[in-house]
Image 1 (cartoon, rainbow, N blue to C red):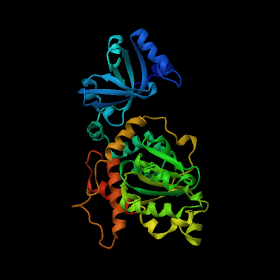
Image 2 (image 1 turned 90 degrees about the vertical axis):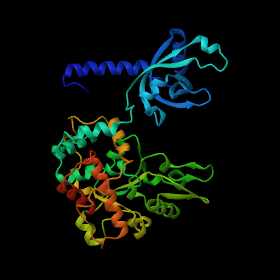
Image 3 (image 1 turned 135 degrees about the vertical axis):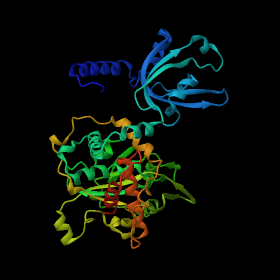
Image 4 (image 1 turned 60 degrees about the vertical axis):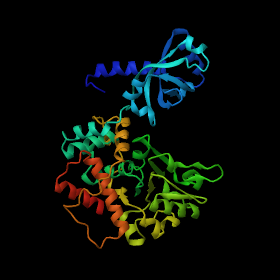
Length: 401
């Protein structure tokens, strides 16, 4: 939204609703839109656009899934201006034309993308723009902006609750990051993983199988860890029936980023998040059991717990109430998701070196957890790479805790 004028906002919404109504291809309308392109010469529609190089003809061709077209002509210049269509694609308003002469040719491709207007991020320079913008904010202002982007009003949260909200974002910026959050019901534990990014999958803990999560040996199909940046297990603590084979494969993946399919080891980069509700208070758990009391017995194994990089104390966030939702300005979710995904390619784990030193008493696995949490928080808070000693120390202390 580029305006604060309520009338302009309402007019803009009306235009958007009309465009969505007229230009979205619904199931069964594919041939109708193709026919309009033929009869009228061109038609406008909203679709995800992907492209690839046709090396035999030395040109690019585009794919429009909603029309089941995978050989649409597109100008080289449009592809160069919107490089993201060569990777995972993006949504755009497309002007699709039809050329009857080309249709008569042998192997002709009558459909062509004449113009497109990106609705999602279409360029790959997202981090350069972000760094320039981040430099104009103080750290406190930046945290408030991020929290509003998640949907929470920072004024309603204390410092510990803000920290929890930021830690929930770390799996989106760190590869192979293992996180557990246990806490009372209604504190927004699963909200971040279901709404923050289209690159994350939230599944019920009881639905997990080896074939669904890693690989299906019957057909060789890769599971969820091969397709998503984050795989989050909701209501994980409630699932008391567990497959020991799944636990063993998961332990290997969480430690080595690999899993085996027969004799062939496969790798993936998905972070794993385990979310569960606690049924007792913290003092009760500390007196009668431990803070992992709610986990299924198979996951209370010391080897599995050693592979967890961070434990979020979910009880440090109040139960979500209406006034805690933000109505202020934040990043569009799609843009924020693209920022988080781009940050996965960078490593900030050594940014404290030369200023601070970790004790030699810390075990290797604990050191890995500290490094990954520190790197993730630094990417989220200081993506431009500029932080004072005091700011770095604060992040390092959170990671160590």
